[in-house]
Length: 284
Image: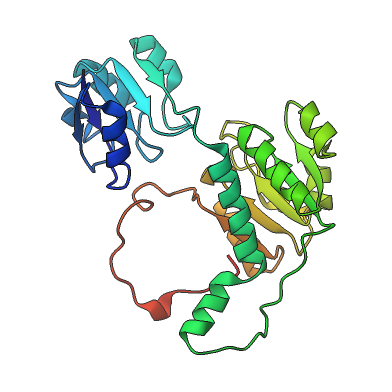
């Protein structure tokens, strides 16, 4: 089969080549899938896309017209593709459901540690030959309450790791995981209670109509002022404007994330050079 890889990154091509083992004819392009770049799929039966690619209704119609029959996502999340439209058009869709939950969960805890122990600020100070410890003190995670919103494959691993830190863990999910309750003494609560009790909150829920802007000014009002919020879900789970206001007013202590609500065209791209004096090192 002829396969077109949209948004191809140099670090993933060797792995894709190894997995293909010269079975399929693959072409790699750096361009994102959009309404304008859909024509590049002409002559290909399969396209592979990443999380920043646009597989909305009109784009899918064009892909279908160009002869595409299969769409393979190189991500676990699939909120960027209109599945209802794909089904109507007869397009087969697959995602990377086996993506390592450990990689994401460990990364989430890494974000927490960097935020709590002020690693970014410390590194900047060392670069400036400033070895003062002022305002670099974090807190022990032991005996703290950690809230996990979404206890799917990634959330389960986060719970396991944070249990090892000696944390009390509360969770919020449509379905309660009985193994987590038994092994790690996880208790389930409604969102409001979780926000009121947690010192740290992890977001590891899929992006749906129900979870879109789940974290907004009203949710934040229920949080402790010293809470640290970690988002490894999707950017749009958080209302970015409300979050920024909360940080600027010190309504919450910090936010660590590897996603952004408007990340298309930004993430995975090489940004132009900026004036380093314009960069604000907030507690982010």
